[in-house]
Length: 469
Image 1 (cartoon, rainbow, N blue to C red):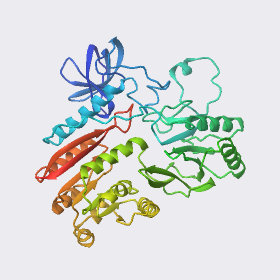
Image 2: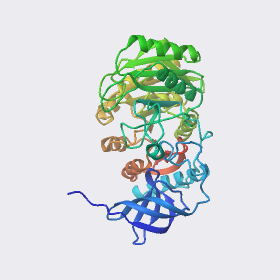
Image 3: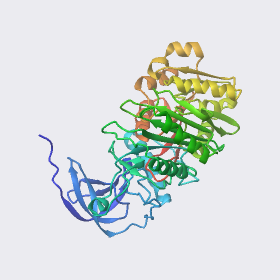
Image 4: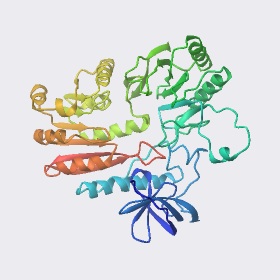
C-alpha cells in the first residue's frame, strides 16, 4: 500500500529562500520545510501541500497575500507551463544571489569545507537568447491548457513543434517564440511547422510510435554557422526532400542541413547514422583564434560566450608557467585542453566517449596544436598507475566531470598522484562538495568562482582551485 499524501493548507506562509533544484523554501507551522515551485523568496502565500514526508512538505501557492520585491515579469508566454526557465519570475540579480548562496552552502554543509572568500558569481552578459543548441519535438496531439480543455471552441490544429512538459515524456507544448536561442531559431522552427501542416506531413505520436516528423535540432555558433538536423521516424523520400529543399531554400544562411532516419523507441541519435543533405556535416565555434569543429553528435558548452569566460577562469586558476605537464580529465572534445595548451609543456586529455576523443584529435590538428594528446576510456579504469607511468606525472590536474561528479577511485588516484594543483570545474556543486571533502586532508581550497551559464534556471557552474597543504 502506497503512502497517502493528505492535502493540507497553510495560510500566510512567508517564502524565505530558494533551494536546490530551483524550488523555493518556506517553513510550515509544525517546523517542517515546505518546498514550492511557483513562488519567489519574499512572497507571502497560502500553500496547499500535495506531498508529506517526515521532515518536509511539497506544495503549491494557491493564494498570494504579498508579492516579493525580488519578482519580475516573465518574458515568455509559456512561463509556468514549459518548465525550461523556472526562474523567469525572479529578477536576474537575485538569481545570481541564490546561485552563489547554493554553491557556498553545498561546499560548507555537504563537504564541511573551509573556504576562502568566495569571488562574486560571474553573471552572463546575455540573460536571454544565450543557448547555441536547442532540440524541439514534433507531436500530433499538442499539450492543451486548462482553458483550452474547458473551452467549447474548435481547437483546430493539434500538431505541435516545441518542448516537453516537465516530467511528461509524451506531452509536447507547441512553441511560437522561445527566448533561449537567438534568431533565426524561432523563424526556422515556425516555418518548419507551418510548411509541415500545410503539406500534410505526419507529426510523431510517441505512445503509438507512428508518424514521420520526430525531432528538430538547431545549433548556432559565434562564427555565424547554423546547423539544422531533422529526425524522421521512417524514410519517405518524397516528403523528406520536399521539407529539406524548402528549408534549405528559405534559409540560405543554414550551413549544415542534416537528417537521421530513426525508427527505434527513443530519439537519441548517438547510435544513428547522420546524413548530410546540404552544406557541411559540421559547424565551427571559435575562441581566441582556436576553431572547434562541431558535428551533430558533439558536446559543446551550450552558452558559447559564457563558456569562454569559464575557460578563462580555469586557465587563470591553473596559472601555468609553460613547463608543466597537465592532465585534463573528462576532457570531452578537448576544448579546455587546447585552450590551456599554449601555457603548458604538454596536456593529456582523457574521456570515456570515443567520438569526443576523435573530435578532440581532429580539432587539435585543425588548430596546429602539437603538445596535446587524447585518450579514450572509462576514467576509473584508464586513469591508473600504468597510465601515469606511461604518460608522466602531472604537475596540474584539471577535472570537469559530469553532474554525478568523480568516481571515488578517480579521487583516490588524484590523491595518490598528488599534483601541486587541482582545478575542479563542476556543474553540480553538491557532488563537487562530496569529492572535495575526500581531498580535504591533502588539499586546501584557495579560490572559488561560481559562473552562471544558464540564466533563468537554477543551474550554476563552479570552479575551485586546490593547492597542496
